[in-house]
Amino acid sequence: MVRLTGSAGSADPSGSAGLAQAQAGFVTREAGLVLIAAAGAWAATAALARGMAGMTGTMGLGLAVFVAVWTLMMTAMMLPSVAPTASLYAKTVRSNRTLRIAALVAGYLAVWAAAGVPAFGLAWLAGWMAGKHPGGAHVLAVAVFAACGVYQLTRLKDRCLAHCRSPLALLLHYGSYRGRFRDMRAGTHHGAYCLGCCWGLMVILVAVGVMNIAAMIGLAAVVLIEKTWRWGPAAGRAAGAAALALAVIVIWLPWLAPGLHAAPSMMS
Image 1 (cartoon, rainbow, N blue to C red):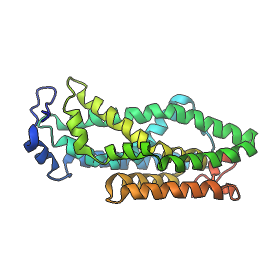
Image 2 (cartoon, one colour):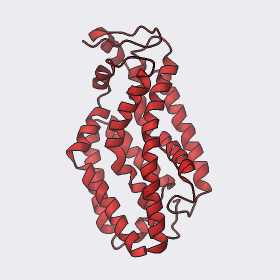
Image 3 (cartoon, one colour):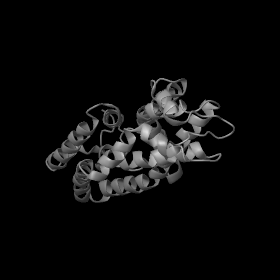
Image 4 (cartoon, rainbow, N blue to C red):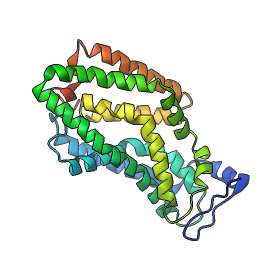
């Protein structure tokens, strides 16, 4: 069995006994802190969204500020589904739990922050097309929904989702990590699989408006259901089918993609 050794002098449980201990419930103080951080991020995102109503594309933000706002959004949307993994990870640690879980979350969010760079490019393209080429923006809306729908039905999506739904298997892998940055590395690894699982859903924000709170809540709910519910994979495929249906419907109902119109209603 893999020994789950900690860094900075911590002594972690090992073998089947340690993993059994880790499996004994998902509620930990650290998981609660993760959920509190998510709640704070939701509050901050909602406050920002009120001042950005009606804005398309990058909402007039530069790359650095856009990435910061994007990271805040991902903190709100993604951390609730990460709480079970953070809780299980915390149960393998006997000292410096809060700091180590903070490093895990920091590594996880670093992946989503990096994803903010291509998101900025897509948002800029959406804003430019909405203002200069409405016809092209209409085509882009169809493409965005179709890309999401198709990806939700692929084997790569299923593989990434399987990793996100199996935190115990991930712990076996992370047990081989060593050094001061072990926890951040584990968070980055988990975040990469999560990005692979969820990027198709997040790209929908380009079509509906990056700061569309209603859409963010809906997408966050889909992510949480996919990762934690018994029928999560089936729900993910249903979401893919719904996105494909939207790709067809938006041809006749372009208002379903408010993020690709010059003067959309960003908030519902």
